[in-house]
Amino acid sequence: MDGLQPPLISSVGRIDTMSDKKALEFNEPRKATPNDKDDILVVIGSHKEAKWDRPIAKRYFDDFFKYPELFNTDKVYVVEEGDRIVGVIGYSLDKYETKNYWLGWFYVHSDYCKKGYGKHLFYFLRKELKKLKVEKLFVDTSSDEFYKTALLWYIKFGFKLEGIIKKYYGQNEDQLILSIDL
Image 1 (cartoon, rainbow, N blue to C red):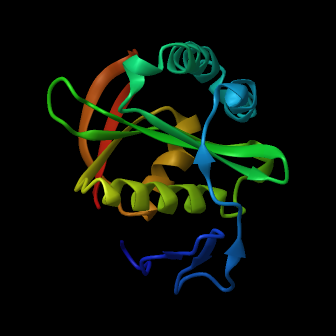
Image 2: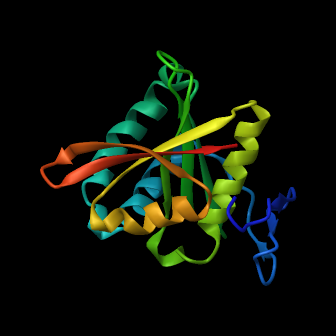
Image 3: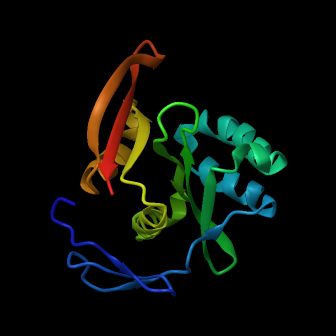
């Protein structure tokens, strides 16, 4: 992980890394429940520039909570500050072809960005995937300017570009596929 020491996450959600000036305290992420759906959509919708993500997320989470048997290899976690959901992260298994795991729905509410919640969620998810003996995690994102912050975040945390699908999302918008060895 380019320049970052592996984190230590205790049961109360403390993150310590050599690059942090101080340890931050967070609530431990928990599995999302059907009652969380609207709050998850608020988190995603807090990023006004990503207005097209919210309808896609709504369809996904409608199905995820309505048909759990179809999504038994997908996991979604939320993190709260107080009683407010401020972040969401998940993964899914490509069970039909490759058995690869994909990072999905990774958002921190816009009011809580740059406070360590993204790092906390990602390290939590890494720990969960390592328990499953997952060796590699994939993520896709867009080349659109709005997603530049996410792309730089992924690179900072060790993801490497695997491929580009030109014009996947439209005439001037490519799909970028990245991965990280766990």
